[in-house]
Length: 247
Image (tube, rainbow, N blue to C red):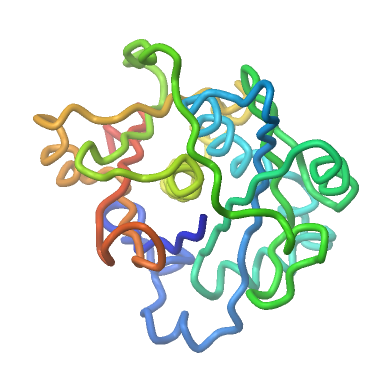
């Protein structure tokens, strides 16, 4: 599923922030996309929440890899070009031989409880590798056998809009954006702690009564561009990292 965020609130106040550019400036830059592929085998698919949490962590693992962060890193130039334009992510699914071929391409796989999500370096919007181009965007509707437990209040939580009905693939792209915004908004010391701990986080649907307060709390908010599934400008997620509550 495709998604292009329009972030708001605290994560967009820094003029050096990649999302601080005006929309027309970002639109005029060459457009790139960050591909994510989730493994969904017919016999044993992952749960919805596991896929979401793994996708969020996968984006963080990718963005903090030395191949991205080092000035001469092999993925640094592609990530910089992607961040100069709209921060698009596309989630596709793979199984069996499709997954094995996808794993042969440069990228990083993150494993959750059962979910596996592979993130690939950004590519031009119209230049997908053939191994990824043929993968399906649809068919990512996963479910939870039981409702996830309440999130630990001391753990970072990505809250989903309770009023939106998104497929798992669409929601994976949104929580990937949310994790990225949280990372950019954190002070360096808190980033280091989060990374050293392995990026623990939870993804939960916010209580309807709490959603208005969350979206006006100053925490990073993602608003979708409306390319797929939901209306443009829809607020999809809030990134609630404990270190951001005190800022």
